[in-house]
Amino acid sequence: VEQNRALLCQHLPARPLWLRQVHGTHPVAMENAQTEVLEGDAALSTTPGSVCAIMVADCLPVFLCDTAGSAVGIAHAGWRGLSGGIIERSIAAMERKSDELMVWLGPAIGPQHFEVGVDVYEAFVRHDAQAELAFEPISGSGQQKWLVDIFLLARQRLAKQGVTRVYGGGICTFSD
Image 1 (cartoon, helix red, strand yellow):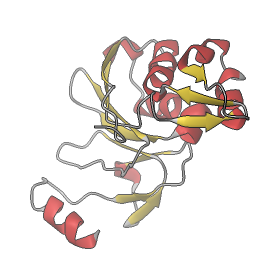
Image 2 (cartoon, helix red, strand yellow):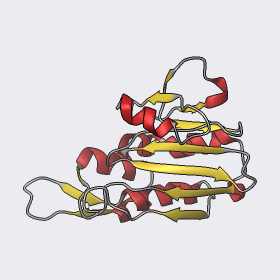
Image 3 (cartoon, one colour):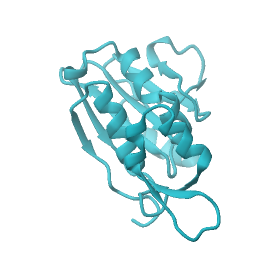
Image 4 (cartoon, one colour):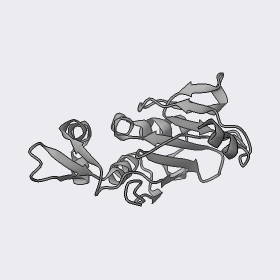
């Protein structure tokens, strides 16, 4: 990991401050960073040349920016963070109007492969009944299980925040 980070840094305008991600809902403003490793699940900046970085495997990276190019961020949106409000908290921390924001949804586990149980289903549907549209029941599993579309869940959350310029999504980290 350290070797790969060193290689990456050779191509960046600045060294990223790496987050200790906890599958939570805390965005970190890079300008307020006092340590080398910060705890949070979104990195935000208004400083030109700064680098916001997160790490994901099957979780959804959500890239955010304003149309003026003066604020950027990236959120690590696993199901816990997404259901807990990482997108909403990141947007609030950016202090921009929703019509000034653009979002790109990066690669994540796709809806044909993201199998979840009742805990995940309830975490989303309890918050918003419309979230049920992102869940497809799996029959014959013997337990209540669903396939879930994390891209749709993120789009629903963004729409509730008034963000209409949403791009990307659909690249599956499992099958692609």
